[in-house]
Length: 155
Image (tube, rainbow, N blue to C red; front, top):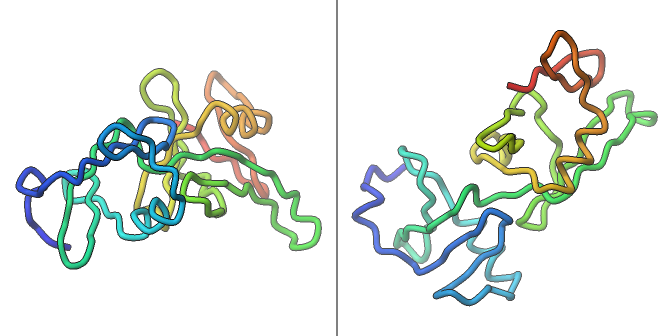
């Protein structure tokens, strides 16, 4: 990873709001192919700031909360595979399995997890939160997600 300070990087005039909508110079970006390309070239620097690598150059991206947002959660009971799972639909138009050991609650009781091989934090939007909350259980004033015989504490 390039150790260049993000403050020294030029801004690319892109802003990602807390719902995962991308804006360039204040106008919402509607070309999904561009947004997906930027997602594929995004990284977090050593201080947790978002950077896009583009044509050999690095640019800073302003992000309100997280670049990735969980927009939908589907529970698959594992009847065919033997392992139940939660499939996340993300703001970059991809799907991946929830890693339940990464669940945590942040400021204002917002639910987060890690995505993309644990490289990025992702914020659950309201709909996805309620879809997952149907499966969350409480025990001794703490909450956990049961999955395949395990209890994953939500901290």
